Image: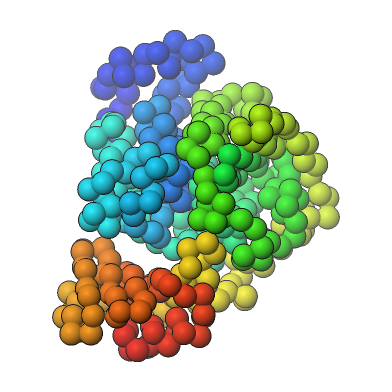
Length: 346
């Protein structure tokens, strides 16, 4: 990262003219570190905006890869990214490096889970939630509360969206807002089942980025105190006051059950995607070139440096170097485990 004194003030001049930010706020931005968890619709808009604002370090975390159906709403990606099946975190990092070369950007192609979430967030000043499921959001909530790191919840679906800024030890947390445990998978609609329009994405991400800019520039008093909800199609805009629950298991009693990993499953149905994700029982380091040679006689194989796609004629598997795999075309966890064992050998 180029220190602001050595770089160009002109890049940020219009932002600096906004008096609540000014030069001191801009200096704070360049010293700030933000993790964006999820580089889909919300994450790409937020990452692009924060990069242009001059946030000094962005940690981009996502387990998935770019597909053509993403391009309607995931603003940093293009057709070439989809053709090459680039990991979203890497594709976002490459785009951001062209947007602002003065900042640093780290791409983590990882599935966020109880074993790595604390390491991901421990060295940042703020976490932006751009995920698509409540299990990961609850993990983020526990990790951020445990380490006293602010985070901003964001969600959108169809034409509606929510945001909520969470300051550990000061505001309600996600468990106060939604409940002690995350809603079960499949209990609600998803973008893959209900659809989504990009204006809803842009508004949620913009609200999150505005809150991030307030916090990182030292304007904490300007933060939104309530959860915000809107539906663009129905023309509804409202605020919801969320009281801190003095009996909350997470922020009051500091019970971090998800972080303990006691209920962690190695197999997860990815709701709305008709796919199952499997995690290896122990960390692995696969050679995708070796896997490509092994699987080529058994079906269609497409491999890059970052992932391998294999289709046996009935199901498509996406295999990552760490041993993680997604089996598409099924919600049957037993079948997914059988296919994983058949083709990966464990």
